[in-house]
Each structure stands twice: as C-alpha cells, then as structure tokens.
Image (cartoon, rainbow, N blue to C red; front, side):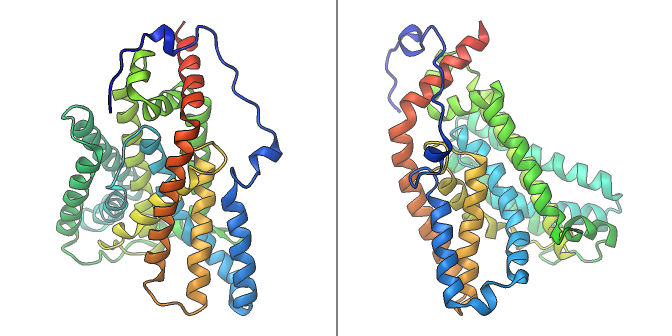
Length: 352
C-alpha cells in the first residue's frame, strides 16, 4: 500500500458527518440484498425440481441445524476480516476446539464446565499467537495464519493420535443436541453470538476502530486509532468463537473428530465475503454473513437432494467465494471513501 502525506485535518472533518439514513426499501433493493432474491430463486427451483424431499420439515430442520456451526465460524471470521486480517486458520481452529474439549474430558478427566472454559481460552491464545505474528513480527496475515493452520493440524493429530476420541458424556452431548421448539441449541447460540458481534461492530467505539483499521490502517492511525489493538482483539475474539464452534461439533456428533476442521474454511470465507455484499455497502457484517450461510447451504442441500455428485458442495462453495470476492471488492471500492470518512469523523469526535 502506498503512503501519501495527508494532514489529519484534511482527511477528517472537524465536525461529525451524519450517516445516511436508509429506508427499508433501499436496504431491500437487489443491490443491497441480492442474497435474499437468490435464496428465493433457489427455493423455487428446488421446490419444483425435488418437491418430495426439498419441501419437507425434516430437510429444513436439518439444514438449519447443520448451518449453525458454519454460521458461528463465519461470524467469528467477520471480526478479523473487518479489521483487514485474513484468518486462514479458522477451519483448523474449529478442529482444534473439537479435539481439545474431547481430550480434556476423556484423556484428562476434566469436568465439563472447566473443560469448556479451557477450550475457549486455548482458542483465544491461538488468536493471540496469530495476532503477534501479524502485528509484532509483521508477517502478512495470509502467511501467518496459513502457518498457524498447519501447526494446529499437527497438534490436533498429536492430541488425538489420528483417531476419534470416544466416550463423551451424555450431559456434554446435550449441549449440541437439545432441541427447543424443534431447533437445536447451537442455532440459538449462533444467534446470540451473532447479536453480540453485531453490537460490538455496529454500536461501540471498538467496532468503529475495527472497521476503520480494515478500511485504511494509515488513515485510522492518523485519526488516533490503535490499529494493533484492533487487529489483536479481532483475532483473539475469532479464536474464541471458532473454538466454541468446535466444541459444539464434538457435542453434536458425540466424538472428538480430528478431521472435521478444514471443511469449515471454505464455507466460512464464502459466507463472509458474500455477506459483505449484503445490507452494508461492501462492509463485512454479521447479518449479511448469516443470510449468506443459509443461502449457500440451501443451494448445496438442493443439489444433494437432486442427486448431484459428492464433489458438488466444494464446487458450489468455491464458485460462490470467487464471485463473492469479486463483488465485494467492487462494492468496497465504490463505498470505501464515504464510509471511511464517516467512521474516522466519529472516532475523532469520540476522543474529544
């Protein structure tokens, strides 16, 4: 990135700029909410193609439940992406959480609550290590988190002995399988985590600093933002959330499986980038991401029910990621300047 000598006074207005108020109609326009219209099209196609299986309550309950873990991982990923860091270890972090909690419960005999807390702490420490490499050692986030991913894969293999950890208690399994109104608990956990992350990003100064850091770190520093702290906080929170997603997987399938992590990498990134084209003018956001999770999951499920080959989910998610990144890049190019100006002005006013 090229640095230009810009005085803070030129870059940040002296008075706050009121954000544009958006009507419900503009928010639901095709440009801002295209995923909703894509979902409607997918629904109609498969409702006509395979109505006997696609329209059943069981299919939709399964789709909702299965998407919860991907949704949690994708919401966690929104935080570092919003701060301008790519966490390519997100899948391995989920897998690590799944194995660590099972290892603590079975191999070490740790009681359930302390095991869950320790697993979340491990996730936070992984995020902190990634942040240290990016912020202090100055390694690009792609390389740093790719390396961390490989290390986590090795540690997961070592802890599990490359075998499933069996014998998880029924009380632990209830976390992932308990149903409330026909919907499993992880779906509600996903919504609670989504609400918390949305609140932090959209309603707190910390969230504005994260967005400013991701939009233009040099300009954010000139406005007084501690960009290092923003990146560290985002990666640590992402690590905690990913570890939580992993322990929910182990609870749901009743084993610690060392192979489950990598499968969440591509869907999480696809959902986060597709979500960034929804509702918030090219900005990574929680609700757009969750909508994208279920749009992609619906497409994959419909193709599977229609008898598509087993490699179709990878193809579908890969194409979705390529298209979403292209659209997101265009959206951010169009909307970055006014959005960043509003963020920086609010940050500066909050410091006075």
